[in-house]
Image (cartoon, rainbow, N blue to C red; front, side, top):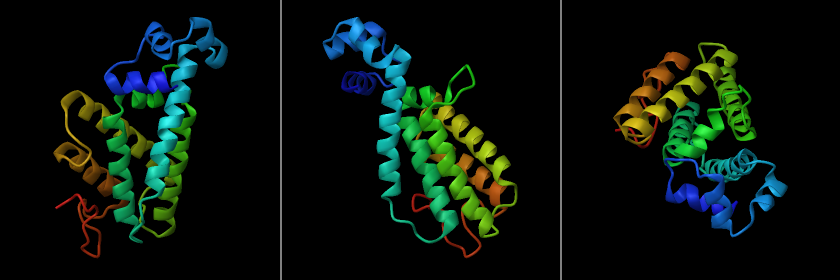
Length: 188
């Protein structure tokens, strides 16, 4: 797993080959297959570990008490994770067979909890299921665009997509909540 993380850090734009993985780890090919079944199994384990570390950092960020600010900050962190880890993000969400990896399932559960909080506070103007689908689609699209076109979660494209999402979900001014507070400390 350390070899896979090292290779992904060296070349975040592409998935390492099986040969690169076992050579970097200094093991014979059967070792990889014995422990992970396939290269895909190894990469899924790496995604799980990387995403778990990210969630730990995210959960360590103090909440402001303003659900809209906190949701916007969570969006920025998620988009930032995707932009900084393009191959891992594609592995999380790019499953052709329609099955999401555990990290993507965990991300969706965390998202659902945040959206349920918005709904419970009367801030969500669409159903939670629809909000999960819209937010996930916009996040994947935003990360994909930023990976291909360059930019950051808090740059112009990231802010515009976040503003459109917040407007769709809550009907609130995209950059400010009803109390006039900025939705994110990174937004000026």
